[in-house]
Amino acid sequence: MDRLDEDIETTVHSLLFILKQLGGRADFHKVFKIMYFADQKHLTKFGASISNDKYIAMQNGPVPSMTYDILKALRGEGLLVGLKDRFTPYFNLIKSYTVEAKLEPELENLSESEISAIRESIHENKNLNFEKLTEKSHDYAWKKAMRDGEIDLIDIAEAGGASKDMVKYIHNHLENLHAAFE
Image (tube, rainbow, N blue to C red; front, side):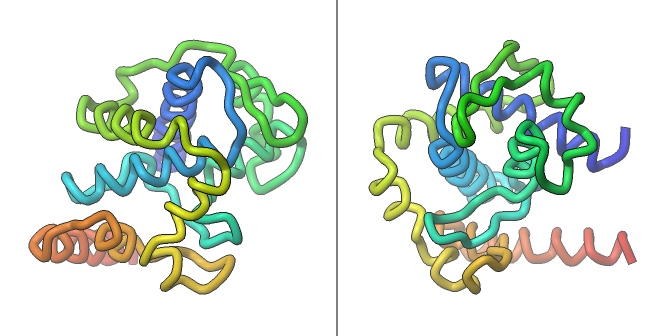
């Protein structure tokens, strides 16, 4: 399995886990914000995001790009539309912006620390409405990014309160990853 396939598997099972914890269905906005804050928590504590997704600074806050593409594929749109059949066994689209989990998440696709960060994010954000989630996610990282541009991972960590040592670790890790792909 290549890295993209691994990232897709992690994202699918993260989504399923979030949806199941929210009663089986949720709107895209709530799911995206819960994922953002879970990734931020994991990044701040462990120096790595859960999903390896890129966050885009959209009008209503950070949006995980690959996650959004997975959900758009269910509508027959987006970059991953060719993989729609891969996602339909897991999710049911209700209207255009609400998704329902069809299956239970396979938790072996997530580490204990990832599950913990997701649970913490769900607990903190599940009862916030659209406006409160938008306001909360308009943090330092979102404000620093260009509108509809990628949000820097280091900025996400700093917005989450990462220590200087953790920020340095993340920076070094990103440099090593970049060098490995050159």
